[in-house]
Amino acid sequence: MLIGQSLGGLLAAEILLKHPLLFNKYIIISPSLWWNNGSLLDQPSALLAGKFAQKTDVYVGVGKEGLTPTANPRVMEVDANLLVDKIKTTQSKQVTVQFDYLPQEDHATIMHLAVFNALRLLYPLAAH
Image (tube, rainbow, N blue to C red):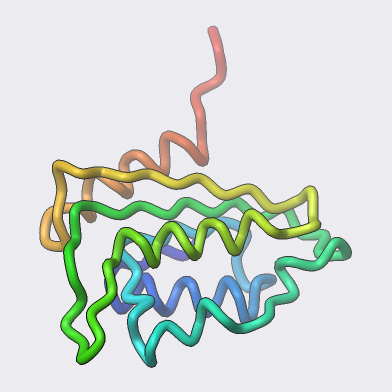
């Protein structure tokens, strides 16, 4: 499992898209996808191919983040949605993605609640 928030979320998203076999669970929180003008969202990925066979679960969580600190501002919530939409285009039946919008949290407060939510979603308790 790989967990990353902010620039760590960007790194986790980059590893997911460029080297998806390194982990089978990804928790990506408030990813700084604005980096390099959002170019990561435009790159191809083996994760999206029908022949991708590793069971891979992805959680993307984002709070009420607002505009990014760039010359051409981006909205982090929108970029997180774009990442989820990209992953959903996979032709592989082995990849799942869950999006969690936490509007009561911001960039400084989201980490703990998002990781908690992610672990509950990725490892649901067995029914009694």
